[in-house]
Image (cartoon, rainbow, N blue to C red):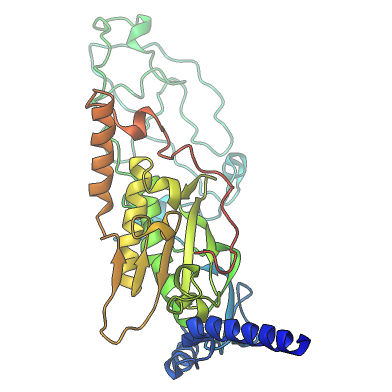
Length: 410
């Protein structure tokens, strides 16, 4: 009797195990496709992804079943890491300065220039005559400074170059050793009248390019993600070519960090063990929940997707660009499992079909809708959400309570 009960219980346990395995045998008992190994190797040999302190090759990940990678990379930063640049003309330098205007030695102090014995002797300028209707008393002679022209007593010192007629203005009147200024009552002088103010000079154009700089700096990934080489290369292109320009467009600040909540994870789609195997099981997918900007503000996918006009415009722009870079993009609205992140992967389908859900909409269109909706709610078409409610263009719901990257939670 006892043996029969034991055998019955044992048979039941085996049957339950077989049923469980039958539901997920499509990947737990299957072999990994050969093209995945070839894709990893080809990516590494191409040099698009190189090993750095932020991208470290780790030991192969094998199983269970088809799960794993032959050349996994531990990634803590994405993007190409290049410096800032402008997207059109080069910086315009100041105008050329004639060589004669430059000092022979730089810097040269004024005192040393005056006292230098290498200066050539200066000839006294010839006396200049003034109009007959004006008579000036002989001015008291003053000792000339060292190494400066010595003028004869009673004669004014001309500021005009030798051989040229004196200027029409009166800038050289009233200097030491010269005639007194008419304002101070010299005899036979017309009444004083001030000069008209010179026209305002037009401000010169600013140096450099006025266009928006393109940020291509690397972005920190937290926590570090275990990924295959092909998707690391695609993520680099997306971050540098789409995410950073969109951040500069909408916030005038670059993204410095992204929060990911799932990278490599041996599981079925949406965490269902009975579903088709997920690309996360091959390190060929990444779930991004938050973009952190250089000024400390956080743009979360969960709240920003329906947040301020700037957040909505930014997130829709990066999602639309992701649909061009990856074969699968799932964002809030795709299904109940993607309410708080953007999922990207490089799944290969025999039909060549690509998935972009929800359908990509330009950020400008979404932002304008948000502004119109906010203005309608407040009965003031001149007020927008970014100006009235959120001056910096961020929603007030962002915080640090996002879940960690736990395998199986998608």
